[in-house]
Image (cartoon, rainbow, N blue to C red; front, top):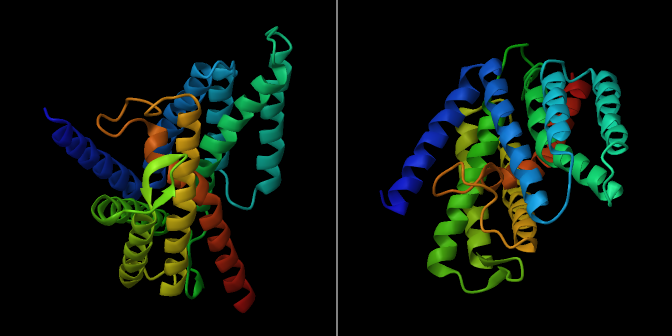
Length: 284
């Protein structure tokens, strides 16, 4: 099978699984995200090992899984519960380092914590957000699971990637950040932004929970912060001279290669949605 066909087949299966799991139910979303979180953490710690570091790989994955499950199955109002349990679990990483007798305990602890913050928390934040009441232009509507916000966000991210690739590969001349990612261009960046904004408006015609202006702001976040997230991942890989974060997705690389934009753009998007939710509460 040619590399193009392999990439296309993998991409098609990836989209079907992602969209299907997000649409089906909160439980299917939890299962999907649990698999992604575990694979993502495994890849992240693996990259650290390749760079000569010694994170607490097994403990980090166990704690990351517990934190994701706890945040997923509680509501968005249980912040103190999340904080208390999360800090208690994370503290065990410090205690565990006492028994490892490694040369760089500070780095080992920091890198282990970094994996949980970078990989686990974005997925946990989305799962928790969708476990609470939905919002719309008229305020709170129901307690039912509503995947439109997450699906819309992914559509914007995927559209930005597609637009950046198509425009950059055909018209790109001016390098965006050559030191980190030589293939990215300013033309591709703006192509991704424009296409994402257009799709943001189209999404607003089908998903009426938010005003089209909010979807447009989300499109900008997906384009700008998503691109920076991709560059950060490229920075990590370039520092240890690897091409892909993993090989689990033939033709596409690893989990971190597919979700790099999502990971760092998520806090900004959810901050926007929480701000919208607060405004609706005040207006009501």
